[in-house]
Image 1 (cartoon, one colour):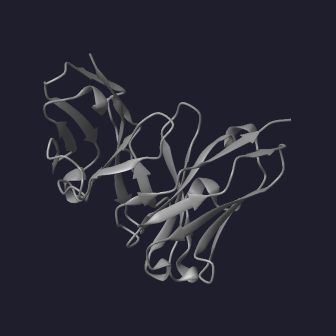
Image 2 (spheres, each protein chain N blue to C red):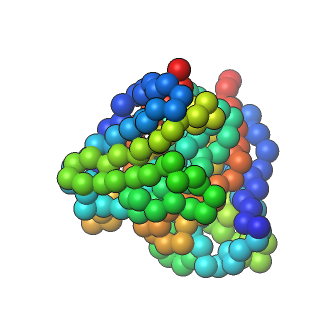
Length: 111
Length: 119
C-alpha cells in the first residue's frame, strides 16, 4: 500500500516560516491535499490539489509538490496555527489496497 | 450553508455492532460522495471507505472489508456506516466527510462521533 511520511513534529517561532513535508513515492504525480486539525475539532481543508486554497484560508498557507516530496508552507506563523497537519492522496484503484491515504500527521508547535 | 451533523457518542461491548449516521444539509446530497474516516485516541486519520452516488461503487479500505457497511438514504439526505465485530481497537472518533468525486478533496466534515468499546 502507498505510504505517506510526515515528521511527527515541527517547531517554529511566531512570525517565522514553517515547512511541513509529506514524502511518498513519486508523490509529485499525485494531487495532494492538506488538512489542519485543532484539538477536539474535525479536520479542516487547508490546501487542495497541491497548491489551491479554499475560500477563507489565509494566503499564509501554501503548498507545493514535486518528485517524492510535497510541502505545506506556513508563512508568518501565528499562535493560532498550532495544530496537527495531515497530507492526503488518492492511491491508485488498480491496486488491491487502494483508496485514500493520510500521512501520519505533524504537530506544529509555536514557540 | 453546507453541514454534516453526526449522531451522538456510543458505548459498546466487544463483539457488538454500531451504526453511525451523518445527516447532511445545504447541498445536493445526490451529487456528492460521503467518506468515513476514523481517528484512534492520540493517533492520526484513517480512511475507512466511501459511499458514492452510485451504491454499486461503494468501496472500503482493505482493513475494514467484511466488517463495515456504508449506505445512504437520499430521502433523508443521510449517510450511514455500520461497523461490526467491535474490539477495543475500534475505540476512537469517527468522522464523515464529503467530496465531489472519488479522488476529490474532503471539503466539509462532520463534527465526529465518539465510540468507546469496553467490557
